[in-house]
Image (cartoon, rainbow, N blue to C red):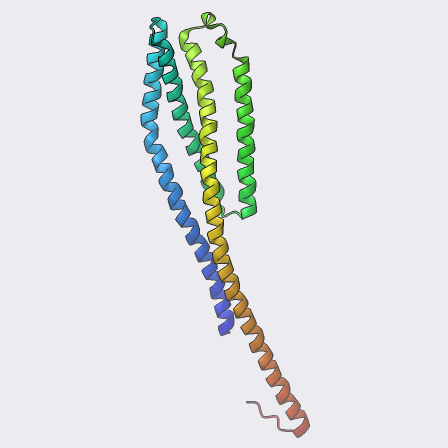
Length: 224
Protein backbone atom coordinates (compact mmCIF):
# COMPACT_ATOMS: atom_id res chain seq x y z
CA UNK A 1 0.00 0.00 0.00
CA UNK A 2 2.86 2.35 0.78
CA UNK A 3 4.33 1.91 -2.70
CA UNK A 4 0.96 2.49 -4.32
CA UNK A 5 0.65 5.66 -2.27
CA UNK A 6 4.05 6.81 -3.50
CA UNK A 7 3.00 6.08 -7.09
CA UNK A 8 -0.16 8.12 -6.71
CA UNK A 9 1.86 10.90 -5.09
CA UNK A 10 4.26 10.91 -8.06
CA UNK A 11 1.39 11.28 -10.49
CA UNK A 12 -0.09 14.12 -8.47
CA UNK A 13 3.25 15.91 -8.24
CA UNK A 14 3.69 15.55 -11.99
CA UNK A 15 0.46 17.41 -12.62
CA UNK A 16 1.43 20.08 -10.11
CA UNK A 17 4.85 20.58 -11.71
CA UNK A 18 3.34 20.85 -15.19
CA UNK A 19 0.94 23.48 -13.90
CA UNK A 20 3.86 25.34 -12.33
CA UNK A 21 5.76 25.40 -15.63
CA UNK A 22 2.69 26.76 -17.40
CA UNK A 23 2.18 29.46 -14.78
CA UNK A 24 5.80 30.59 -15.12
CA UNK A 25 5.44 31.08 -18.86
CA UNK A 26 1.98 32.62 -18.52
CA UNK A 27 3.55 35.33 -16.34
CA UNK A 28 6.01 36.08 -19.13
CA UNK A 29 3.23 36.31 -21.71
CA UNK A 30 1.09 38.47 -19.43
CA UNK A 31 3.96 40.92 -18.94
CA UNK A 32 4.54 41.10 -22.69
CA UNK A 33 0.84 41.71 -23.31
CA UNK A 34 0.83 44.59 -20.81
CA UNK A 35 3.79 46.15 -22.57
CA UNK A 36 2.04 46.02 -25.93
CA UNK A 37 -1.13 47.52 -24.47
CA UNK A 38 0.76 50.34 -22.79
CA UNK A 39 2.48 51.29 -26.05
CA UNK A 40 -0.63 51.20 -28.22
CA UNK A 41 -2.25 54.47 -27.16
CA UNK A 42 0.84 56.50 -27.99
CA UNK A 43 1.13 54.90 -31.41
CA UNK A 44 -2.55 55.46 -32.14
CA UNK A 45 -2.22 59.18 -31.39
CA UNK A 46 0.91 59.40 -33.53
CA UNK A 47 -0.71 57.60 -36.44
CA UNK A 48 -3.74 59.89 -36.42
CA UNK A 49 -1.75 63.10 -36.14
CA UNK A 50 0.65 61.99 -38.88
CA UNK A 51 -2.24 61.15 -41.20
CA UNK A 52 -3.91 64.51 -40.54
CA UNK A 53 -0.66 66.32 -41.22
CA UNK A 54 -0.09 64.44 -44.48
CA UNK A 55 -3.60 65.22 -45.71
CA UNK A 56 -3.16 68.89 -44.91
CA UNK A 57 0.23 69.09 -46.61
CA UNK A 58 -0.98 67.36 -49.77
CA UNK A 59 -4.21 69.35 -50.00
CA UNK A 60 -2.28 72.59 -49.62
CA UNK A 61 0.37 71.46 -52.08
CA UNK A 62 3.16 71.94 -49.57
CA UNK A 63 6.69 70.83 -50.44
CA UNK A 64 6.76 68.56 -47.40
CA UNK A 65 3.80 66.53 -48.68
CA UNK A 66 5.89 63.54 -49.72
CA UNK A 67 7.81 63.45 -46.46
CA UNK A 68 4.63 63.87 -44.44
CA UNK A 69 3.03 61.00 -46.33
CA UNK A 70 6.03 58.80 -45.57
CA UNK A 71 5.75 59.68 -41.88
CA UNK A 72 2.04 58.88 -41.90
CA UNK A 73 2.54 55.47 -43.51
CA UNK A 74 5.41 54.69 -41.15
CA UNK A 75 3.24 55.58 -38.16
CA UNK A 76 0.42 53.39 -39.50
CA UNK A 77 2.90 50.55 -39.95
CA UNK A 78 4.26 50.88 -36.40
CA UNK A 79 0.78 50.84 -34.89
CA UNK A 80 -0.38 47.84 -36.90
CA UNK A 81 2.87 45.98 -36.21
CA UNK A 82 2.16 46.30 -32.48
CA UNK A 83 -1.43 45.18 -33.06
CA UNK A 84 -0.18 42.14 -34.96
CA UNK A 85 2.08 41.22 -32.06
CA UNK A 86 -0.74 41.58 -29.55
CA UNK A 87 -3.22 39.56 -31.60
CA UNK A 88 -0.75 36.75 -32.13
CA UNK A 89 0.21 36.65 -28.46
CA UNK A 90 -3.48 36.48 -27.53
CA UNK A 91 -3.93 33.54 -29.92
CA UNK A 92 -0.97 31.77 -28.30
CA UNK A 93 -2.38 32.18 -24.79
CA UNK A 94 -5.73 30.78 -25.92
CA UNK A 95 -3.94 27.82 -27.50
CA UNK A 96 -1.76 27.11 -24.46
CA UNK A 97 -4.66 27.32 -21.98
CA UNK A 98 -5.58 23.76 -22.98
CA UNK A 99 -2.03 22.52 -22.12
CA UNK A 100 -1.49 21.08 -25.63
CA UNK A 101 1.14 18.53 -26.55
CA UNK A 102 4.31 19.53 -28.40
CA UNK A 103 2.90 18.07 -31.62
CA UNK A 104 -0.27 20.15 -31.37
CA UNK A 105 1.71 23.33 -30.69
CA UNK A 106 3.96 22.67 -33.68
CA UNK A 107 0.87 22.23 -35.84
CA UNK A 108 -0.60 25.45 -34.43
CA UNK A 109 2.60 27.36 -35.18
CA UNK A 110 2.78 26.03 -38.72
CA UNK A 111 -0.85 26.99 -39.26
CA UNK A 112 -0.10 30.56 -38.19
CA UNK A 113 2.89 30.72 -40.55
CA UNK A 114 0.76 29.49 -43.45
CA UNK A 115 -1.88 32.09 -42.58
CA UNK A 116 0.69 34.90 -42.70
CA UNK A 117 1.99 33.71 -46.06
CA UNK A 118 -1.55 33.79 -47.42
CA UNK A 119 -2.16 37.29 -46.08
CA UNK A 120 1.13 38.52 -47.54
CA UNK A 121 0.01 37.26 -50.91
CA UNK A 122 -3.33 39.03 -50.51
CA UNK A 123 -1.53 42.29 -49.71
CA UNK A 124 0.51 41.96 -52.90
CA UNK A 125 -2.67 41.45 -54.92
CA UNK A 126 -4.30 44.49 -53.32
CA UNK A 127 -1.28 46.61 -54.20
CA UNK A 128 -1.44 45.41 -57.79
CA UNK A 129 -5.14 46.27 -58.01
CA UNK A 130 -4.90 49.72 -56.42
CA UNK A 131 -5.67 51.84 -59.45
CA UNK A 132 -5.77 54.82 -57.13
CA UNK A 133 -1.99 54.76 -57.15
CA UNK A 134 -2.17 55.65 -60.85
CA UNK A 135 -5.11 58.04 -60.80
CA UNK A 136 -5.02 60.17 -57.67
CA UNK A 137 -7.00 62.95 -59.32
CA UNK A 138 -10.14 60.81 -59.52
CA UNK A 139 -10.50 60.55 -55.74
CA UNK A 140 -9.99 62.76 -52.72
CA UNK A 141 -6.65 63.09 -50.98
CA UNK A 142 -8.24 61.64 -47.84
CA UNK A 143 -9.37 58.52 -49.73
CA UNK A 144 -5.99 58.08 -51.35
CA UNK A 145 -4.07 58.36 -48.09
CA UNK A 146 -6.63 56.14 -46.36
CA UNK A 147 -6.11 53.41 -48.96
CA UNK A 148 -2.35 53.66 -48.64
CA UNK A 149 -2.64 53.49 -44.86
CA UNK A 150 -4.85 50.40 -45.04
CA UNK A 151 -2.28 48.57 -47.13
CA UNK A 152 0.54 49.71 -44.83
CA UNK A 153 -1.40 48.53 -41.80
CA UNK A 154 -2.19 45.19 -43.42
CA UNK A 155 1.48 44.57 -44.05
CA UNK A 156 2.47 45.98 -40.67
CA UNK A 157 0.13 43.52 -38.95
CA UNK A 158 1.70 40.68 -40.90
CA UNK A 159 5.17 41.85 -39.94
CA UNK A 160 4.24 42.16 -36.26
CA UNK A 161 2.63 38.73 -36.22
CA UNK A 162 5.69 37.19 -37.86
CA UNK A 163 8.01 38.83 -35.32
CA UNK A 164 5.83 37.64 -32.46
CA UNK A 165 5.73 34.10 -33.85
CA UNK A 166 9.53 34.05 -33.94
CA UNK A 167 9.55 34.95 -30.24
CA UNK A 168 6.78 32.45 -29.53
CA UNK A 169 8.77 29.69 -31.20
CA UNK A 170 11.60 30.35 -28.73
CA UNK A 171 9.15 30.39 -25.82
CA UNK A 172 7.55 27.11 -26.87
CA UNK A 173 10.94 25.48 -27.28
CA UNK A 174 11.87 26.46 -23.71
CA UNK A 175 8.42 25.53 -22.39
CA UNK A 176 8.47 22.00 -23.77
CA UNK A 177 12.10 21.46 -22.74
CA UNK A 178 11.10 22.34 -19.19
CA UNK A 179 8.13 20.02 -19.36
CA UNK A 180 10.27 17.25 -20.84
CA UNK A 181 12.78 17.57 -17.99
CA UNK A 182 10.04 17.29 -15.40
CA UNK A 183 8.52 14.42 -17.38
CA UNK A 184 11.82 12.54 -17.31
CA UNK A 185 12.08 12.98 -13.53
CA UNK A 186 8.52 11.76 -13.12
CA UNK A 187 9.13 8.75 -15.35
CA UNK A 188 12.22 7.78 -13.36
CA UNK A 189 10.30 8.08 -10.07
CA UNK A 190 7.36 6.07 -11.35
CA UNK A 191 9.66 3.41 -12.80
CA UNK A 192 11.45 3.12 -9.45
CA UNK A 193 8.15 2.81 -7.60
CA UNK A 194 6.85 0.16 -10.00
CA UNK A 195 10.05 -1.87 -9.74
CA UNK A 196 9.76 -1.74 -5.95
CA UNK A 197 6.08 -2.70 -6.10
CA UNK A 198 6.82 -5.64 -8.39
CA UNK A 199 9.66 -6.84 -6.13
CA UNK A 200 7.48 -6.56 -3.02
CA UNK A 201 4.67 -8.56 -4.60
CA UNK A 202 7.11 -11.19 -5.85
CA UNK A 203 8.68 -11.48 -2.38
CA UNK A 204 5.30 -11.94 -0.72
CA UNK A 205 4.30 -14.53 -3.28
CA UNK A 206 7.54 -16.46 -2.77
CA UNK A 207 6.98 -16.44 0.98
CA UNK A 208 3.40 -17.59 0.53
CA UNK A 209 4.41 -20.38 -1.80
CA UNK A 210 7.10 -21.52 0.63
CA UNK A 211 4.69 -21.62 3.56
CA UNK A 212 2.14 -23.44 1.45
CA UNK A 213 4.71 -26.06 0.50
CA UNK A 214 5.75 -26.53 4.14
CA UNK A 215 2.11 -26.87 5.12
CA UNK A 216 1.49 -29.47 2.46
CA UNK A 217 4.56 -31.57 3.28
CA UNK A 218 4.70 -31.33 7.08
CA UNK A 219 1.25 -30.36 8.19
CA UNK A 220 2.59 -27.26 9.91
CA UNK A 221 0.14 -24.72 8.54
CA UNK A 222 0.31 -21.99 11.14
CA UNK A 223 -0.50 -18.59 9.62
CA UNK A 224 2.04 -15.99 10.62
